[in-house]
Length: 66
Image (cartoon, rainbow, N blue to C red):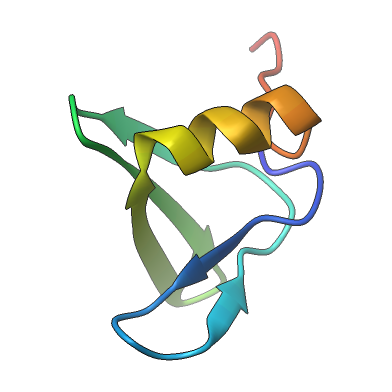
């Protein structure tokens, strides 16, 4: 669940924000992929594992029961 401000960089472009709400997470040894839907739009962002851990530690990404 995106609870706070979470951003990712698309290629070499500017930082883009991920809207608050439910996400799906796929974790590998080197990175984390976040996926979400917003109406008809489906977004996906990969970020380094260290950045993901920082967002979790800061409380911007969290879990819900259910």
